[in-house]
Amino acid sequence: MHQSLVFGKPQLVIPSETDTFDAGARVVDAGAGLQIDYKTINAKVVAATTFAILTLHDKYAAASKKVGQILLAAGTIPLNVLHLHINLFIRVCCINYSGIN
Image (cartoon, rainbow, N blue to C red; front, side):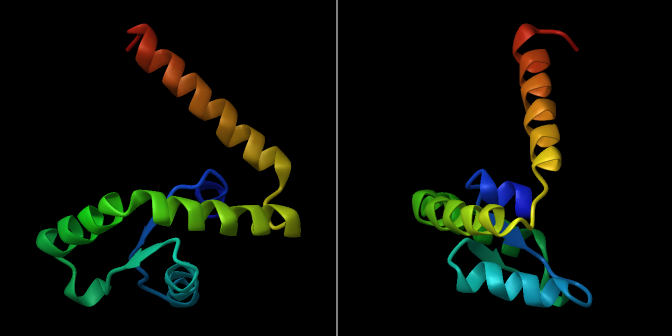
């Protein structure tokens, strides 16, 4: 979750155990995404919540980026992990766009 916040990606959180409930609440409180109760989850709820995030994407993306920058500045995301995610993303994009399967 942390790495995607650094890149400003809104979150659809479905907490199901221990600390995930707290993390989900923090994402929602920060305006970085929405949360679904795992006990009542179904396709209709996921679709509606995803649509809500996409409809207000700029708002959620800005909040996500802000939270991500705070996490990065606090040192909670090791830069080597972040660089690994960037490199993997670039490689996947290059493979997908070059037509290589």
